[in-house]
Length: 416
Image: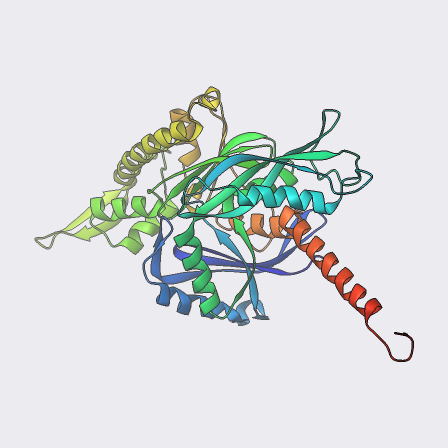
């Protein structure tokens, strides 16, 4: 059994906690919950940091009689949303340090250090991850894993470098820390998701991962398990709920319920009863049918899909424009469960395959908890260069301690 990991994904009106482990190429869930926020997190902006801290303190001690479970949580894997995510390609080259030119861990660490020293395009961003695309050595040889043990006088690394806004990262780090939790690892949501899908041999190798959240929709261009471009629009499932509430003149909670029950329900019925009523300004009851709801939902989806189409064009730009009319759109997120959404998108993006991700993980709804599942997989099984760097530092520290023990003067065994 793999080591248990607690993952937090903080978004919009709630945060998600998943406790699980990765074993035999599968994510196993011990516990999951969605906890409402008393503040709003939109487009990476936290409206009230102190309130968020209090919300997060809840998970330190989980006592859930309904599931017969008690948990004490001390450290977490923190999932970052992709708001403001910047990705750029970097190369680094270094001479190998071994006298016989065998490539060692330290050579890979040196390549990583050179990449980390490169200046980020945005001074307000912070480097969070480096994912190698390939390593090249003499003889025109390329490797997708660190070529430790191979012989070459030099080594080149080509890598994707990922950065996020400093303010977003610092605010989330502070909230988690002030809540009394230690951050064990940090994972960018789409990076973990893409890796998780790749580990599960997902049928598409090149696709756009579209996460439809409560207040935002993110788009990430993925190729061979890595994220290469990122974009987002500030429209999500809550905007549809608010549109229903406004157009039908009903409370937000009732509109949310109608959205979940019906969505865009285009089935034809011989009888078209009222699905909700309201009292108008003169005290008379006014009823609305499924057809009325469909009109509101269809109008919103037209607005949302137009923005999605524009964001997709920006995402692919000139570098990947050839994929625009054929790239699969792979949907995750809470609002991706909207009834009728897939059929609607197939009519709009007629040449693009549409797939809504569903997994058979017991204990966590795959669409809304997918970021947490991806983070567990990524944190447990991906051997990052940072991990290699830490292991090399530990080796050097052990060697130093051993050397100090061997050279320490002893009155009984050493002579001056």
